[in-house]
Amino acid sequence: MKKSQSHILVVDDDQEIRILVARQLRRHGFVVDVAANGIEMRNILGTARIDLVVLDRIMPGEDGLTLCQELRTTSNIPVIMLTLLGSETDRIVGLEMGADDYIPKPFNPQELIARIRAVLRRANELPINTPDYRDRRLRFSGWTLDARARRLTAPDGSIVTLTDGEFDLLKAFAERAGVVLNRDQLLDLTSGRQPGLFDRSIDMQIARLRRKLAAYADANEFIKTIRQRGYMFSADVVEADE
Image 1: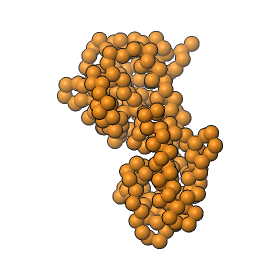
Image 2: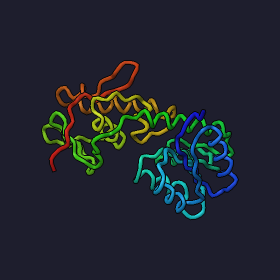
Image 3: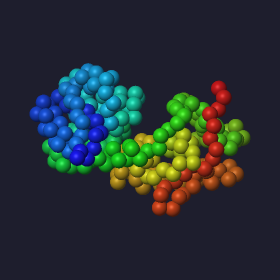
Image 4: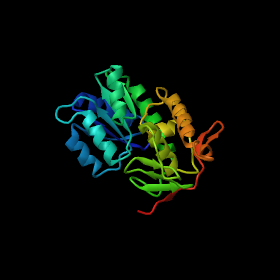
């Protein structure tokens, strides 16, 4: 019996790596397509439902960072990046571009499979975001969160200054009001995408966000800590009229 029917797309200009990774993934029950470049990747994405992309960092023409950034602007498909560049800086750049994980070459195929399963598990645990609030204005308890302008307006009309991380965190909460989100889910929904490296930063960002909101009556109570589970945004959120 197959352990998984998740559909993986392997994008790498090295044919030997494509064959190796595809063989190992199929052996563990995954459905696999392969692509040698960005053109082939887009063709497959246009015809198949892909659950995760394994993407080479260095390729002729469009490199992995460019393709990862493109994927992030057009979809929520998880990305694991493979690279010969193993420096801390390069790894952080990849994560900032939207990669969910980053594995240096040469790699252990079993480790890659374990990482794929971990990323898929986190992605599948994320609550469905309905309705689609992307680039919309949301209102809660007199506050207005403008995703397009990246602006938070307090009930008295003043603009609240937030860092990019704090804004992304508040947006993730507001779009999923009433849903308990753990650290891994919040990492996937915001800029820090690798658990373990940035997980405590989520707690610090929440603390800072609470302090900024607490400058207004009872706003500190919007983000509730749910013991041993995570955090929940408790305000009633509606889409604002344009």
